[in-house]
Every structure is written in structure tokens, then in C-alpha cells.
Length: 254
Length: 218
Image: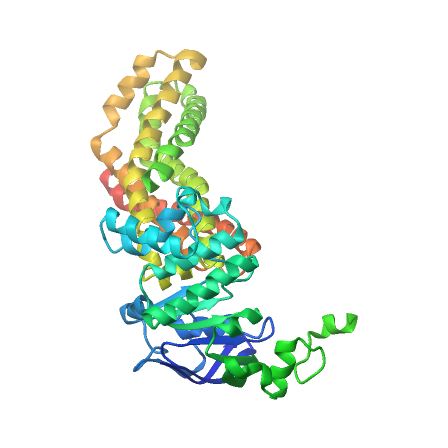
């Protein structure tokens, strides 16, 4: 279980999160939604310890990670995986080297690394033909799926996905969503997914809406379409009018 | 891989610039000593100048411009495209993975490049003596033999190794501090090259004072 308690984050003079409180149940899929620029990625990076919060606490299991540094934080990284919005593949090494990197760095034998890498790549529908290619020669969607395969290499118990399906075609989006679901069903992996796609509601257990630095809604994904909370009602239907204001500049053109 | 990039691939420009500088150095030294007819000093001045100062400095500045800038730009780009964060989330220490191999490689290859630069500079001086100044090259070689010691060469190579440490440390540091986008990567690269060049020139004075003190010749 991940507990986020009164989390505040300020960059220069601007507050991004202003007291986020959220409980992410273990072995479930929690989807975080919200307008672009609301700080969803910042929240996710705070959960894994890549960004230190200004105040508040994040507890993973029994460990408060906000005050961890060095090796203690490295140990958190070993149990948590992070799928980056733009894949963040190392562009100076090949696809295979990228995927195998977490294991080769631990000194695991090349045969074992290759076997594991092939297994994880197959899970995201990537074949042998791209293994020796460099990330710069791949499409955005392919990079994203390779990024997911790389994250799976360490067999994390928690995976944080930052828009895992943006830029993917509907078929590959579905494959990624099915993969997140199977991770939960087969291995009990806790997933936190930032997504703008409605299809994720078919897979998620819990949905949280981040707006103006706080969680405005938390609820069950199964009943989200029946929920009358004004924030979630407006947001998931994409209604321009409601408590959530569209970007002012964009709104003036509507 | 880093040794190949920083060392082998920099060798051509280091040798080329050292030959040209050796020739120019010989020309200007000759202008001075011709007034006194002391041509036997030519080899002494050129060899000490190249081994102790020009060889290591030139190597440092060239590697700083070529490899230092590339290191800062590469790590800076990795930083802004979240590749450095990705390493962290995979349980890999980015400093250990990205900085240490570059620093170690620089410290190892810089003395080799420094030696090439010294030899190339002396060869440049020899060629200039032979074809342009029409001075008996034996006089030049005799001057080198009489004055150049192993301590001069080792001191120069030690300087080169230290410059290698400075270049790689500064460039990786500038890379890791990069925030923002493409413009910031450009700024980090410029900052790295400027800071690297200044630190080479400033530290060279102090290293020369320590390695080749005035008291040794008084």
C-alpha cells in the first residue's frame, strides 16, 4: 500500500501539489487523471523519490521514503518501477542493451539477461528484429513499449506508469492495458497509471482526479460513469462547462 | 569505449595542432635567438617549452573542446530527456554509470595524448628547422638531448593527466546540472568548455610552480 499524506510541492514560487492525500491499495490499479499541467507527473515522481516534496509524507509499505537518500533510496528503486512518458531509453545503446541494462548492471550472466529480455519484450509485443536497433530509429510507440519491458526486467512490486499509452495506436494501447491488468492478476503488482484514455477505466480498480494541486475525487472505476461528483462528471465526459476550467487561452477560442 | 572516444579519436587533432604549434614556436624562438646567433639554444627552448608547457596545455585545450563539450552535451541531453532519472529508477547510480568511466578514461588517455603532442611539436620544430630556417638539424637535436630529461616529460604527462581529470569532472558536472531543454544543453556545453579551459590554464601555472620550481635552477 502507498499512502500519500498532505503532500506539498513548490517549484520556485509556484505550488504544484497543495496537500495531496491519497491511499493507493496494494495489488490494485489506481488511475490518476487530471488536466494537462496539473502536476500528475510531479506527483508520480514524488512517489518514487525522484523529486523531494516540500512537505508531507509518502509511505510505501511501512517505509517513509521522503527522507531517504543514497543507498536507502536505491533500495526503493529496486522494488518500484517507473515507466516514463517519453520512454527515456538510453539513446547511445541498442534496444537489447537498454532492456537488459538493469540485469547486466547487476552482473547477471548474458544468457540469463537475454532470456529475460526476450521474455519481457514478447510481453509488450516486440519482436527480435529491433534488438540491434538504436532508440532513435524507432517510433514513439515502440520506444514506449520497450520502456515498459525495461521496467519489467527488475520484477518490481509497484509500477508507476506516466501516460503509458499516449502516442500508441488503439491496438497497442489495448495490449499495454491488458499487460497492466495481467501484472495485477498474475503477480499482484500495484500499478499507478496516469492516463487520459477512457479505456483505462475498464482495467483500473480506483480512479483519482487531481485538480488544482489536490485530489478532488477518489472512487471505484466500475461506478465512475454513474458518479455525480461534479469534477469527475465533467472531466470524464470532456464537458467544457463545470467546476474545472479549460485553459483560459484555449477557452477564449471556443 | 570512452578511451576510444576521448583518446584515439582525439589523437589526430592533438597531433595536428601540436605539429603546427611546434613549427610556429620554433619560428618565433628563432627570431629571438638569431639576434645573438645562439642557434644551439633552439632545441633547448623548444624541447622544454613543448614538454613542460605547450604539449600538455595544447592537449588539454583540444580534448576539452572536443570531448569535454561532447560529454557535457551528452549527459545534459540525457538529463533533460529523463534518461538520468531512468537510470536511477533502474537502481543504477548515474554518477557511477556515466561519470566514473569518463573520468577514469580521461586520466588514462591524456598522458598518452600529451606524449604524442610533445613528440609532434618537436617533430614540427625539426621539420621547420630543416626546410624553412635551413639550420643544421643536428644542432636542434643536440639541444634537445642536452636539456630534455625524463623529469620534464613525466612532469608534462602528469599535468596532462590532471587536465584529463579536470576536463571530465567539469564536463560531467555541467551535464548533470542541466535543466530545461535544448537551449539549456547548449548553455551547459558552453559553460563546460569555458570552465574547463580556464581551469586548465590556471591550474597549469600552479602545477608548473610545483613541478618545475624556480629554486631548482637558481
